Image 1: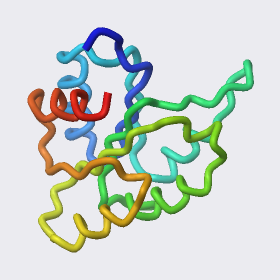
Image 2 (image 1 turned 60 degrees about the horizontal axis):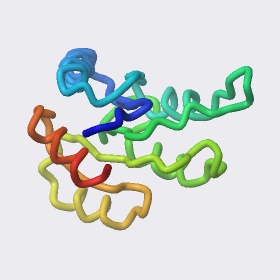
Image 3 (image 1 turned 90 degrees about the horizontal axis):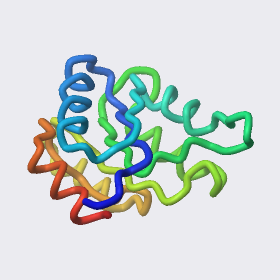
Image 4 (image 1 turned 180 degrees about the horizontal axis):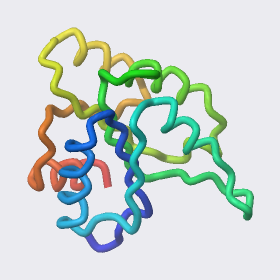
Length: 135
């Protein structure tokens, strides 16, 4: 990858998973900045925050867990779908989950906002495949 992504947003309630995912992304050298949110509401708040220059964060890639407290991945996608275009940008959302329920994969396929569905754990190889496929 020649050009780094501006930002990757990790949305997962597990600190250990976020730590490992951050290390993998750093090792891959694919992002200028990595932001972590512990649930969907924190992620929506982050995406809705305007800088002093009037610009929204607009990460290039969101790695989204399904099962989280406060606001889960499905609720996040519903709210995300209603954000203004300037808040969403051209974000690629990858559901990254431990769920082996085939209904979750089918459900993800029905959301135009969800670009991909991957199983945890994130690995360097999986991350490289996501980058190659979507960027």
